[in-house]
Image 1 (cartoon, rainbow, N blue to C red):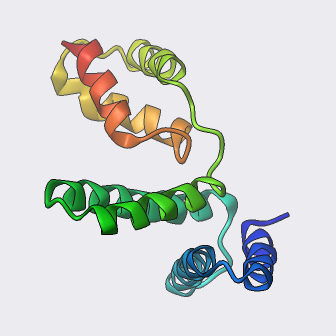
Image 2: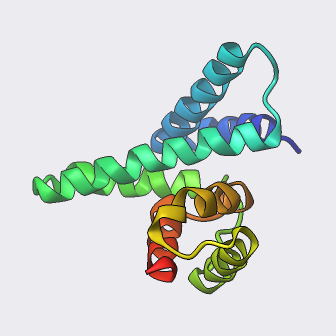
Image 3: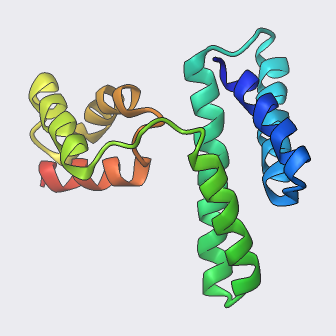
Length: 147
């Protein structure tokens, strides 16, 4: 089942359950997917759908940090619920150890030896972990293993 089919099915269920929060998030995600599809001029493949989902997740996580810094717990709680809903549509996340293995393999593959080679390593790692790991975690692990 494609992501859009799943979203449509869950949207109908959220309407039946009168779950306004879930319905709102699903509509936002669907709109983002449709906008991306229009922008690219074709139906999205699975990788492009993951990119949109990851972008939506990152936006919410960034906003969550800002709201928590500002002491806006009401808005932070709402965003935590949205993040939980979007997480249901994301693929299973890799553990830190699994990401570290991928990073070490990439470092060996490109022959990286210093922080100057970070771009090469990130270029190999990111396509492998797209949607399955947070970019900041990957960045941190690459930096640790190159220093």
